[in-house]
Amino acid sequence: MKIDRLRVFMSRDKDRPRVIVAMDTDQGITGWGECYNHGPDLALFPLLEYLLSFLQGKDPRRVSFHIHHLLQQTRFPPGALGLAAISALDHCMWDISAKALGVPVYMLLGGNVRDRVKVYAGLYTAPEPAAARDQMDALNAEWGLSAFKLSPYRVDMHRHRWGEVVRQAGDYFGKLRETVRSDYEMAFDAHAKIFEPAQAMQLGNALAPYDPLFFEEPIRPENFEAWGELKRGLQCTLATGESLYSRFEFLRLLQVRGCDIVQPDICVVGGLTEMVKIAALAEAHYVTIAPHNPMGPLATAINVHFSAATTNFRILEYRLPHGPGYVFGTGNQEVASTSQYEGAHYVLDPYLPREGYLDLRPDRPGWGVEMDEKLLGTEQYIHWERKVPLKPDGSTGYA
Image (cartoon, rainbow, N blue to C red; front, side, top):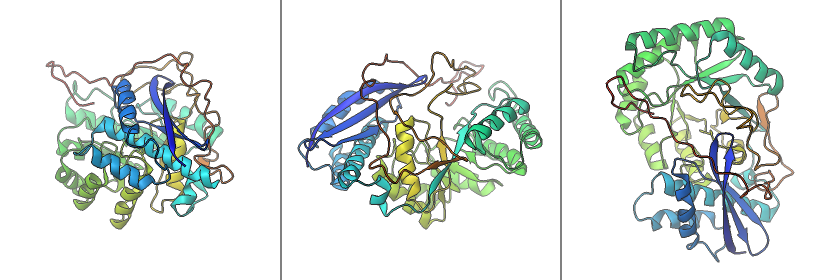
């Protein structure tokens, strides 16, 4: 079997662009992958065309060989765009390898260690407790979801005294606990907006009395020793890793005991091949893994197979493929329009929750989903960029 060509599509997932990759072989088997959209997303097209030159005519089932070769070909460790492109190629080759054998991808990883994959949904902002309760109850009634992620920020952190930001976060979580069902799990994502570890510690410890599922990425990812310091001063579960690029960075984080849960992204780190290595490192440090997954339904399918075969898996981030992108907004005080951004349609049969879990599809080879090839390539491009906050003095904050 040989790799014949790549087809790269700019699709959309509600209000976000998505770069989807199809890898065709000379035996008629197609593998599918999804890039992370760090931006600029259009830059991924020439990158993928260049990387194909090292794969064309080669056997796609030699996944580890090809991924190692591509990583070495860049000479220096590739950054966000390079790894996003390599991740999608890795996905494609795993999909082809499993389809060639007629089995789900997780069977190539030693088989499933669980029968279904637990997921959590993001509310992302910090809605009033009654509104949050209503949305959680609606998601629970329809999909069985009982784990959710919110923002800890009730007021603008750059325009209020830090102690007030912390006080309101603690009060808010306390009221949430009194308002929602006691069996609901709630995580809080601080989005790496806090520069000082001491402030992150204050915020996490204000949430701690009410038992958060985890406190996610409060500070920037670059200084691993700072994460060790933060972890030692926190009284709640600390999660991070969406901004890290390889097993070597995760190893350093684990060596300083910088978190309780790692959150690598399968569309960022180099694909499934690298995710498996990161999970093994985490397991050796008694750390669980909760994959970062804000992407589309193909990325979710890929994550399902990783999660099914990973013993130290904890929980998977999940976004419903249809409906508003973010029920209470985007995290930047913007409300997504249901009519304009109604869903991601490039996957015809996405994984949908049942009782709060995604069921495996043992009778389907590869990722277990069907792509809409008639739709791909026909959608209007949608531009998205991260909103960087401005402080009152005119300087930029962290996004």
